[in-house]
Each structure stands twice: as C-alpha cells, then as structure tokens.
Length: 293
Image (cartoon, rainbow, N blue to C red; front, side):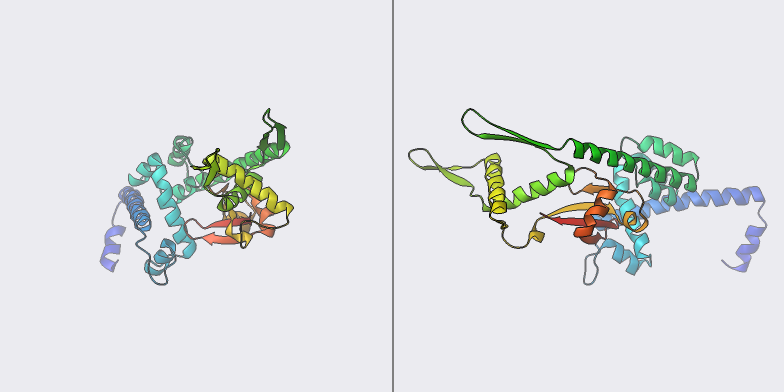
C-alpha cells in the first residue's frame, strides 16, 4: 500500500472505516472457504503426487509457504467441511472465520452441528475454542466410562449343541476384539475355500462363516503349538488406532478410534503405545498406534 492509499484511508470517518474492515473480513472468510474447497478437491485427485512430495500438506508447505502443521490442518478442515454443510455454508457466506471453523471441525457431527454453529455465530473465536476443549474433555470422560463398562462386562461362554458342536459366545473390549478379528483374518489365509462333501466327494464352496470358523481353529492350534500360523512377522497383521498427535504431546483429550471401528479413550492409546509402533499420517496430523496381532 503506497503513501497515497494510507492518506486516503486516514481521511475516512471511523464508522466507515469500521464498516470496511468488517466487510473485508467477511470477504476473507469466504475466500478462505473457496481456497479450502480447492485444497480438498486437489487432495482427492492426488494432484500433489510427484517426486519427493509425500502428501498434500507437504505440497502446501512447498508451494504456498505454509508451516507443515498448519498445512495439515488446512487439509483436515477442507475434508471435514464436506460432512458439515451448515458450517460450510456459513463460512462460504463470510459469517465464520477459519479459526472458528478449525475448532468446530474437531468435534462437530451431524447431531451437534446446528448447536455448535449457533455458538460460533454468537461467540468469539476464544469462546468457541473453549467450548470445543471442554466438549472434548467430556467426550473423553464418557469414553473412559464406556471402556470400563466394556472391561467389566467382558466374558466368554460356551455350550455343546445336541449334535456335539461347540457354540461359543464372546463379549470383548473393543481393542481385544479387534485383535481377535485380525488374528482370524490372518488364519483365513491358511483355510481352503472349498471342501469335499458327501459320499461322491463332490467339491463345494465354503461359506465365509465356515471359513471364519476354520480360521479360529487355526488360531487356537497355532497358539497351542507356540507358533504363528499366519507365516512371517506379526507386523503383517495390525490393529490401528487413530489418535490426535496433540493428545500424546499435550496429554489432552482428543479424537481416538480404531480403524473401521469404535472410539476408544486416548488413555488406552497411551497405554498401548508403550509396546506398539507409532506412525504419523500427513492427512490429519494423526498418530497411528499399531498393535501386532
């Protein structure tokens, strides 16, 4: 801005100066929304893929000069807005700043979007950040309580049916259940997909449920023999927990869930991380806790 422009702005009445500032703030919010939509589409098409570029966040760091952590947040928010139409529309109209939207997308879902949006439209960015932080702590307390219920209700029961078959029923905590499913999945690699049936020994296709049952027997046999029947290292079969990296760094409540599974408390992830491998995903700055099955 040259000296003439500064002089022109200094001549404006305070009321008009205030109006222009707030109007331009709205334009910046709307422009930021459009930019995030472009980033989200660019990432979905993997337009950043190339020699030496590991992710869209790295591309933004290289091409747009963003700090890598800030770039990861831009990508995360861009994707999150697709599932939050009301928040997205308010930002597109210039009514919500990126600071507010960044905070909202950490906790908002279809069930809570309307209430959280109302808070954001009538509160400051600091107010929104505080609400989100307290909301995450409440979620974490609920998750810890839920894990305690899972632990107290865990059980395995069985009985033998009239034909002599073993009927097994198990109720396991989420992490233990995920490990068992991974073990069964690994055991299925050792199970044939067909079997001979009847006096004529006709070959027939095994159902998925039957192959799972055979895989469970493979897992039990492998354990009793003291061997891993899946072949190779246990790291080939992993249970992955996705958890906010800041939750490890700052010991705060945050997002934590099993891959393709339910949420678990962050405290569980910290405990499991003592004997698991850790890796960072560039998409959302999340830390993956991997447990060998």
